[in-house]
Length: 171
Ligand SMILES: CC(C)(COP(=O)(O)OP(=O)(O)OC[C@H]1O[C@@H](n2cnc3c(N)ncnc32)[C@H](O)[C@@H]1OP(=O)(O)O)[C@@H](O)C(=O)NCCC(=O)NCCS
Image (cartoon, rainbow, N blue to C red):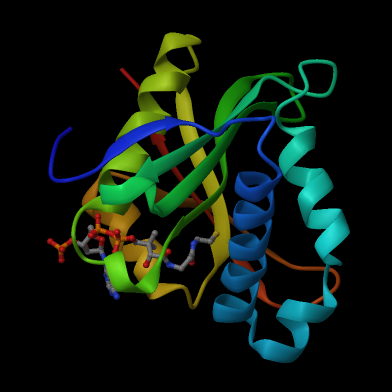
């Protein structure tokens, strides 16, 4: 174990772990979009199904990684999958990345990002990317420190939020 935590796959048979990640996906939305919009966007059932969707190869090639600290406490998670752009070019997507507020600024996010990038590289994906709100200074700061740049912007059709695409080439 490095730095007091390790990264492993979610246990797909664990309702507790699926539920925890789903709740933290909601927490992310609340943190980024505010309480009202963040809770209204998706039901908890949709979020739990979305975690499980990433674990079924019939849907996508993806993984759900957990950063696990002492006593098995889940400090954070990253959901990654293979995506393709309109021209069919494949890239690795961080669907979501979250660190529990009590464990932030201790490099948990950095380790999850690197782990996800390693998985993408193992699939020979030429690029790692993620989308977030243009006001998400924490994620933009984390990604900026690791060589990501803004490569696209769009306005979210439901929330009206200006979204940015952060991406970097993988070696
Ligand atoms: C973004 C997030 C994952 C970062 O996790 P973390 O474990 O705190 O990140 P790290 O400790 O590895 O920080 C690495 C770097 O990220 C940047 N960073 C982290 N927190 C930051 C903040 N509050 N403001 C600006 N930059 C920040 C810094 O460059 C930092 O490097 P430094 O410690 O040398 O200053 C975490 O803040 C989070 O879960 N945010 C809410 C969820 C979210 O917005 N997820 C993305 C949704 S699309």
